[in-house]
Amino acid sequence: MPRLKLPLPPLPPAFQPRPKRPGQGQKVKPLDQVKEAGIHAADWVDERTSLSGALRWVMFRKVPKGTNWFYTLGSATMFAFLSQAVTGVFLAMYYTPSVTEAYESTRRITNEVFLGEFVRGMHKWGSTVMVILIFLHMGRVFFFGAYKYPREINWIIGFVLLVLTFVMSLTGYLLPFDQRSYWATIVAANITASGPIVGPYLGDFLRGGAEFGATTLARFYSIHMLLVPGLIAALIGAHIYLVTRLGTTAPPWMKTDVDERLREDEV
Amino acid sequence: MFGTVPQPRRTPPKSKYTADRLIPGSFEGETVTRRRLMSLAVHGGGGIAVAAFTLPALGFAVGSAVFERPPAAWRPVGPPSDFPNDTYVPKVITDVPGIGEVGKTTVYIRAYNPDIDGEKDPSIPGGGDFVALSTRCMHLGCPVRFVEASERFICPCHGGVYDFTGKVDGGPPVRPLDRFYTRVENGQVEVGPRYSVNSEFERFPSYRDPGQDLDGVGQYLYPGRFSTPKLD
Image 1 (cartoon, each protein chain N blue to C red):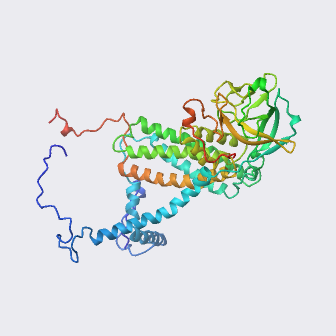
Image 2: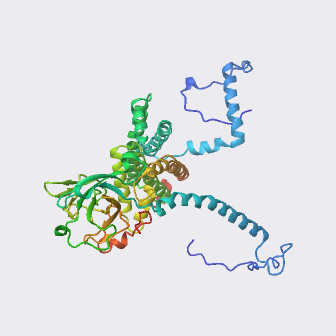
């Protein structure tokens, strides 16, 4: 007997399942059997993982009155990241991170590979979209006061995610290896190096030496492909966990509903 | 939380000696229980194991980038008669070998001119009979070009201007253009490693990146690096 109870959507009365007439209950239709099998499979997994509790905790949360479309900017940023991750993984199948072949392989992706221009375009423009969305999301959180107690840690995680997104933009910019990305990287490394005391060594770390060389591209590729995406994914997980745990805030223009019986003048 | 008065302990604090706490198998003077010792050992062992792969990996990423000194290279650019002392001749040298076009850079070279440059520094390695200016703008590293008509170096990015000797004439650059050591060997002028100068043309052998001021406190804020070639 399945124990998993899925919440039912509010159906109009005509579509709601009717109780069976007496005497007809024994007949099992094929559709019922399929349904039973599906529930059984879900049950099998749930019995061994207790996933349904976690799912219910994440999906069926209470949201405050006044929640509006601005609250979707965070998810939009996450989907921009997912799109970047998917297109990026597949771009890596055709891209060669070597100083002599990087430009040529990028050109081949754009001009020759089937749908290459489209996937590269999604990755290129998607990065801009992600930066715009992350700023809009940050603005929403700021102007709605959603960074305040008890959500300060989520604001800090969000800030780290913002910086990591910039690191992705910077390291990804070099990879096409054309004139623009080469000089942009020279300038970026020099800006890094102009920090006092540690700057010169940070610049060396970024370039992989005193001069822009073959290691610079490999380094940027590794940071762009492996290091930062993993960090971003992990931090998005922490970010969403805290959102789920702490809940979202009501917009500042919503008045708090105070129980009439608790009003001081009434009491 | 506030306003609570600390209550006196009802039970006396436990002795730090395991023997006093009647732990079976304890011996005289023992303070660390076996359970505690084992958990410390396991946590310590885990920490050592993580450090054993993290530290080498970090050293691998940082070490050769920050501490490896490449050898000094001398690159021939032509006979001494090619270079007049009143204008610059652009020459392309390979600054970083093995990476194709990206590793090349333009150097503006002329013969040393006492009327313009003043008295020659006798201690300069290679003799300094030729002046070789780098095209790397000292604002953020864009390539400058020499404009014959105005006898100035102009940067296309943010409008940095340098005079004939490479000294800043205007715009955002923070110090004169970098230079290269030069020498004459086998009848050829050779361009050696790069060095930086401050506005008094004082030499800084470990060249600095663009944007790093070398006047006053700047020379201490931007120390020399271990990754630049060294002449000996």
